[in-house]
Image (tube, rainbow, N blue to C red; front, side, top):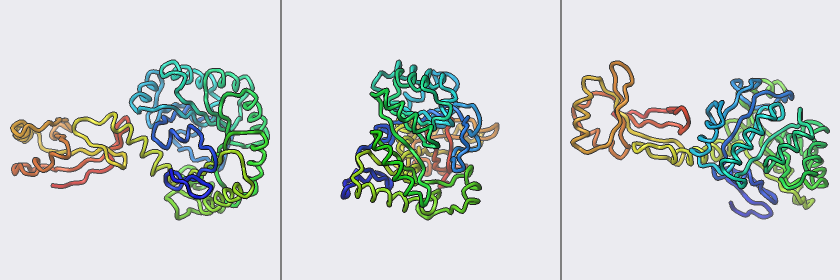
Length: 362
């Protein structure tokens, strides 16, 4: 992070005025696991970016993988080397008991210092649920303000004390007056922070946004035109008024360039095999050779003679995929009898693995 005037400049254009929420600080380092608790939600926000695959379905994900058992969740957190989780949806309040099971399990497994933050619009959230979440160990709660009722719940959350209460909203182009009015209210309530997210166009909300006159901007593949400029106006106003709560502007570019990449980097270093290397992009790379079943024994003998470690995978009845570390690519190319395809394979370090591209070199 770099200090620029009154602000702290974060990765990929993020800007912070005041205190950065703990959940965000861990996210910047790739140390947060995302727990998607349900796709159910009673609020039909036209700008909701949740994918069609998850929206409206009562399903659970931990990072990119479905999970049903708590043990699967714990294993993913361990593999990802996370120091906290973010619980999101949908609306977590609609599956409040499920949230409690997750919170209790991770606190028991990783200790009270393991950080948990949760997002909610407050729809379906009662004072009793709120108190249970607080008492069981949620460290940070973020409200998406959709009505006056949400603000009333913010006040209830603040009365409980000993957790960080904040607000997180998308920056609609031209909404600086509304956002500043909200910030003044939150400041009076002594809320810790507000997160401002650059508005994004996704596959699932594109039709709704375009019909309302929003346009795709040129700052990133998903940014909405005018959202960034509105956020900058809000930040300027925060300086002029001496706003005392933390204000964090999170850019659309950050999601891919930092958030996902950093998490993949940490997870990739954790799960990579002896045949793979982690790239700065977060991808894993390995050298692969696809040959016919009849040719494979001769090539395997060559690899043994060269003392090159390899893995052999049966791709089909007729094809074998031999995998070696990229540093051994030159040795493979030196074997003149190879008639198969040699490539560098790039994969996301997720479960199950996802191969992004094969760069053919022979």
